[in-house]
View 1: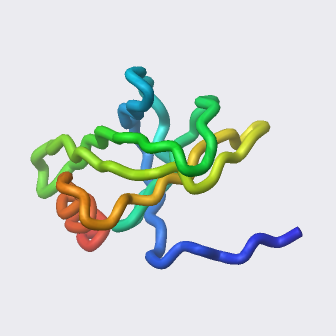
View 2: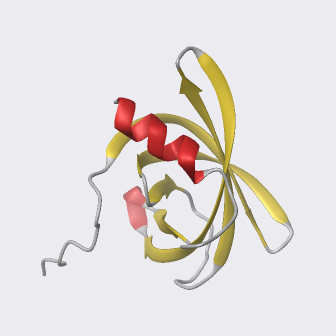
Length: 107
Protein backbone atom coordinates (compact mmCIF):
# COMPACT_ATOMS: atom_id res chain seq x y z
CA UNK A 1 0.00 0.00 0.00
CA UNK A 2 1.38 3.39 -1.00
CA UNK A 3 1.39 6.21 1.54
CA UNK A 4 0.51 9.71 0.41
CA UNK A 5 3.40 12.14 0.54
CA UNK A 6 2.86 14.50 3.47
CA UNK A 7 6.10 16.45 3.33
CA UNK A 8 5.65 20.11 2.54
CA UNK A 9 9.37 20.66 1.84
CA UNK A 10 11.87 18.55 -0.11
CA UNK A 11 14.28 16.45 1.95
CA UNK A 12 18.06 16.64 1.76
CA UNK A 13 20.11 13.49 2.41
CA UNK A 14 22.30 13.96 5.46
CA UNK A 15 25.16 11.84 6.75
CA UNK A 16 25.89 12.51 10.37
CA UNK A 17 24.71 12.13 13.92
CA UNK A 18 22.26 14.03 16.11
CA UNK A 19 21.30 13.85 19.75
CA UNK A 20 17.67 12.88 20.31
CA UNK A 21 16.27 13.81 23.73
CA UNK A 22 12.93 12.66 25.14
CA UNK A 23 11.50 11.75 28.54
CA UNK A 24 14.75 12.69 30.29
CA UNK A 25 16.84 10.47 27.99
CA UNK A 26 19.47 11.32 25.39
CA UNK A 27 20.52 9.10 22.49
CA UNK A 28 22.99 9.61 19.67
CA UNK A 29 21.29 8.67 16.38
CA UNK A 30 22.05 8.64 12.64
CA UNK A 31 20.34 11.35 10.60
CA UNK A 32 18.92 10.08 7.29
CA UNK A 33 17.53 13.32 5.85
CA UNK A 34 16.53 16.86 6.79
CA UNK A 35 14.27 19.61 5.51
CA UNK A 36 13.45 23.07 6.78
CA UNK A 37 10.47 21.66 8.68
CA UNK A 38 11.55 18.18 9.80
CA UNK A 39 13.99 15.30 9.74
CA UNK A 40 14.20 11.51 9.81
CA UNK A 41 16.41 9.67 12.30
CA UNK A 42 17.51 6.06 12.02
CA UNK A 43 16.76 4.75 15.50
CA UNK A 44 15.28 1.88 17.44
CA UNK A 45 13.75 4.29 19.99
CA UNK A 46 10.16 3.27 20.63
CA UNK A 47 8.35 6.59 20.52
CA UNK A 48 4.77 6.87 19.36
CA UNK A 49 3.51 9.55 16.99
CA UNK A 50 2.74 12.65 19.01
CA UNK A 51 5.71 12.26 21.37
CA UNK A 52 7.55 15.53 22.02
CA UNK A 53 11.29 15.48 21.30
CA UNK A 54 14.27 17.79 21.05
CA UNK A 55 17.02 17.18 18.54
CA UNK A 56 20.50 18.68 18.73
CA UNK A 57 21.85 18.62 15.17
CA UNK A 58 25.41 19.74 14.28
CA UNK A 59 25.43 21.67 10.99
CA UNK A 60 28.40 22.83 8.95
CA UNK A 61 27.47 26.33 7.79
CA UNK A 62 30.09 28.01 5.65
CA UNK A 63 32.93 25.98 7.16
CA UNK A 64 31.88 26.62 10.77
CA UNK A 65 30.06 24.04 12.88
CA UNK A 66 26.91 25.19 14.70
CA UNK A 67 24.72 23.14 17.02
CA UNK A 68 21.10 23.48 16.01
CA UNK A 69 18.39 22.90 18.65
CA UNK A 70 15.12 21.67 17.12
CA UNK A 71 11.85 21.09 18.98
CA UNK A 72 9.38 18.76 17.35
CA UNK A 73 6.95 15.88 17.52
CA UNK A 74 7.22 12.35 16.22
CA UNK A 75 4.90 12.03 13.23
CA UNK A 76 5.96 8.61 11.93
CA UNK A 77 7.68 5.51 13.28
CA UNK A 78 9.06 2.82 11.00
CA UNK A 79 10.18 -0.63 12.08
CA UNK A 80 12.41 -3.37 10.76
CA UNK A 81 15.66 -2.81 8.88
CA UNK A 82 14.82 0.84 8.25
CA UNK A 83 13.63 1.55 11.81
CA UNK A 84 13.39 5.24 12.51
CA UNK A 85 11.41 8.30 13.45
CA UNK A 86 9.98 11.03 11.27
CA UNK A 87 10.01 14.28 13.25
CA UNK A 88 8.08 17.42 12.32
CA UNK A 89 9.24 20.71 13.81
CA UNK A 90 6.67 22.48 15.94
CA UNK A 91 5.51 25.79 14.50
CA UNK A 92 6.10 28.84 16.66
CA UNK A 93 8.76 27.25 18.89
CA UNK A 94 11.78 29.22 20.01
CA UNK A 95 14.69 27.18 18.71
CA UNK A 96 17.41 27.46 16.07
CA UNK A 97 15.48 26.13 13.07
CA UNK A 98 16.67 29.14 11.06
CA UNK A 99 20.11 27.46 11.02
CA UNK A 100 18.52 24.35 9.54
CA UNK A 101 16.66 26.42 6.93
CA UNK A 102 19.95 28.13 5.97
CA UNK A 103 21.70 24.75 5.70
CA UNK A 104 18.98 23.29 3.44
CA UNK A 105 18.83 26.42 1.28
CA UNK A 106 22.60 26.36 0.75
CA UNK A 107 22.61 22.72 -0.43
